[in-house]
Amino acid sequence: MSRSLVTGPTAGIGRSFAHQLAARGDDLVLVARDEARLEELADELRAQHDIEVEVLAADLADRDQLIGDVVVNLSDVLDTIGSRDQQLTATIDTLQQFITGLKGDREAILGSLDSISNLTTETSNLLVEGRPDLTADVKQLRRLTGNLSKKRNLDTLESALQILPIKMEKLGNLVSNGSLFNFYVCELNVDVSQLTGTPLDGLLDGLLKQLGSLKAGGDRCRTGGNEYGKAAS
Image (cartoon, rainbow, N blue to C red; front, side):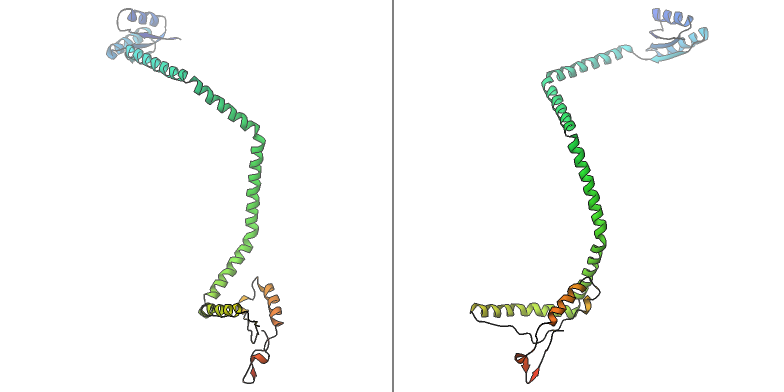
């Protein structure tokens, strides 16, 4: 079954066409401005011919004007595009060159992506492998900080820092005069008990052996017949 569109069916030729199409069995879509008259005609046609009838109240003249405005605006747009034909062509050419360049550098780009992926994997592995050692270093650094922050050690550091400028000044004066001087170790005490069981054990063993070989004491270290400091410990 076909469907026909009839405009202006509420009177005159349009009404006649509507009855003829309904009589041959066409379903109808009726378009006019007067909705009440459209509904009246639709009921009449449904009753007489047993067909489906839809009504659309609209002014096609207004729609014609709208369509005309759209066409005019579209024409203006096309004129603007036409006036910028060279710019548009240049843009398209540039885009084409860009795509061609990407195609030519495809292997290099894919290779770079593979290298970045490998770098990411290696960096991740490095962090995973180095994490235990880094964690241990941080723990030992925390222990060292804790030892240095003790009052006894802080007092020792403060005293050493206060005396150091005086010693350096005297030493500088002595050297500037061209004098010959010797250092004598009368007594040397080293306390490494706080560092046992740490990654520094191996280094401390060698250091203590070297310190143990130092000659300490002697005639120059005698005070009142007593010698203080005989060996490094």
